[in-house]
Length: 67
Image 1 (cartoon, rainbow, N blue to C red):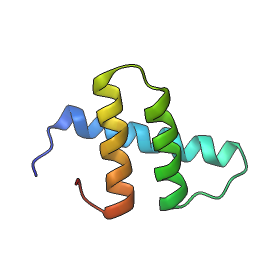
Image 2: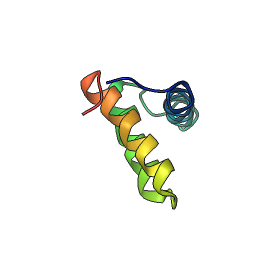
Image 3: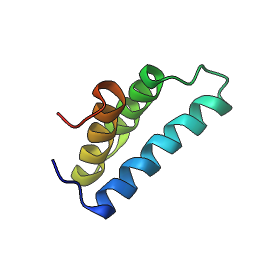
Image 4: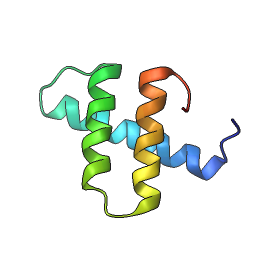
């Protein structure tokens, strides 16, 4: 699946945000905890586009690809 550059940037930003949030809260930073944090962000996100970005970023962390 081809991902456009802007969407990729948003997913990388979301993954970075999750990693930094986990690090500063003293939690372990791993693929699983990042995916869980991205799911939390997705549930809190009101916009459809944002929800999709967080969902796709979590899929990349869990499976190494988009589902």
